Length: 93
Image (cartoon, rainbow, N blue to C red; front, side):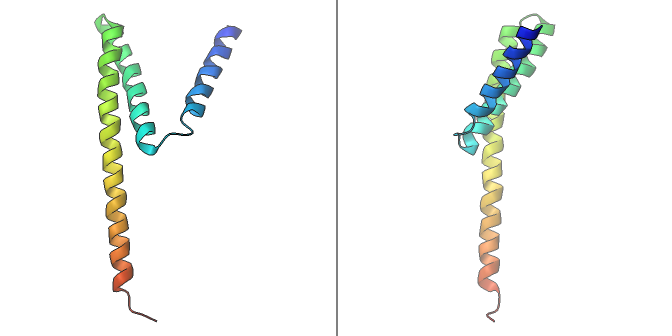
């Protein structure tokens, strides 16, 4: 039991430390893939093939993470454009 706890703690630590040098796109894509693989493995285990479930879930999660990243970038770009336009139309003091 103690050994499993140590392995779990090391695994979680590697996940968090491994993301430190990544861009937002890389982090979101990787996170989506990991969550998708986990969910897919659970559903696959219930359906009879955890491996296929994890593979399909990972692919879906990667796509979802990337699409979410592009959406967030679009929102940030729109905000910046609106902020810049607002700054240009303010009266001078």
